[in-house]
Length: 89
Image (tube, rainbow, N blue to C red):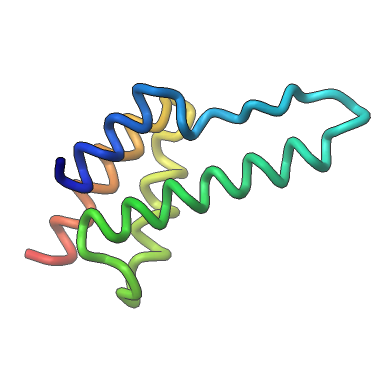
């Protein structure tokens, strides 16, 4: 399985979904878990598309995230791939 396929499988299996239920009492825990999941997703994207430790990776991720994260991780994956192709080809 390629890194891209692993990311798709992780998305489909809900591996980036926050399992902590949000409430006033645990909002800090919820935010920490959300941040950790997004950071894992981002690192996996960077490795899959050859942008790990690339100087433009931060910009690529934030552009993809800001444009489409409201539509879900699959859309971020697609947008990141398109932007990575612009940088690397």
